[in-house]
Length: 485
Ligand code: AMP
Image (tube, rainbow, N blue to C red):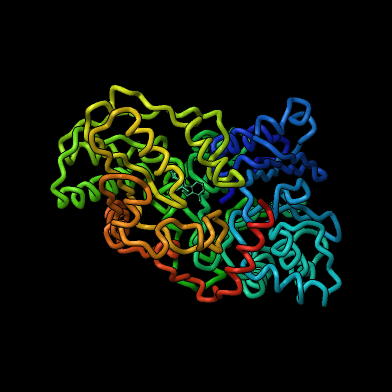
């Protein structure tokens, strides 16, 4: 999971301030590294490890001139903590192209082993975006009729080549120097990309971002999400052109609604907030069938707050804030080992005793991955004197690694792997455990949009929509991740 933004303003207007405010709005999608590239009469870049506010200082703003800009926040999956892997990437010769992506190239190993050596291409990083950039650039250079810019159709040919050669799930944004901006979504539209525009005295500005919240903070109107396999090109005539390049069914990632996206974002027409409200209601119905009495529903902050409110309302019990999150502690999920993760959960979530003492509490989380958070919070709830500690997850058991750019646990690490709910309950130490059902989860999100859209839910089912995920591929990705820790 990463986040990007690309902006094209009228000539003479610098975009860097909007790029940076957009990146701050999607900092939750990656805190490992940040970068931006702008184009006025040449590419200017600033990239580095750390948060957006750590990487960028005032002096960079005056240097990063130009009306075209691309920004990125990184959450490393493949590739590591090295600053050579920080996006955006660009080339200056024989034409200028800058790019950033969110997702993962699943055949990166094969491309590195066979495709690039045969073409005498040496990759400079271990970031899979380089594969997309070089395949795209090589085709565009081969196809374009003139050395002066390129057409929407020529860019579409380059995107078709990327779809043919580069497998996986990746939304991409970028700039062709002096010619325009582009964005495309992977053939199954697994990764999000939303388009917006803003009126100004000198003409319209355009933006594409991973989440609509970026458009909100930079004052853009959300126009629509890109479709699966669709290209958006805006050339020097400044007219957005949408071209359908891929022909696969749309399978957006369901985990965006569960956990990744901010609740104030709208993805593929579905409000993330509304989806979570509905997920809480639906899970409440399942909880009711247990017949267990509770005194309060307590969310594990932040993502499960929304669902916990409707869960409590539906069950007719109070919603209570039992844990206070210290948001300045780094993310527990990406700590290198379990011991560090467990200690960090304790630093991150501090309990409020009165919400537990003598009570039967139902603690709600968005998901249970390795079980570190659950084990710790159940233990804390008991230390605070809870009479009964129940646990619920508004997503189903996570069982399958995600090869599409999500840092899920490896197969062995999933706590739910090969266990019954009773065994899990014992391992986590709670008095009862309830997971959302897969069908109920899908229906809850479909209901928000009143349609029957299907999703990528491979992390729950093991059915990978791209149809080309092999055990070897999963094991290569697992090795890369373990090596990067
Ligand atoms: P765990 O402690 O390993 O069971 O992880 C569960 C917690 O991690 C939940 O509270 C989620 O909010 C969060 N989480 C779930 N998926 C991810 C992910 N891919 N990256 C980071 N955090 C996640």
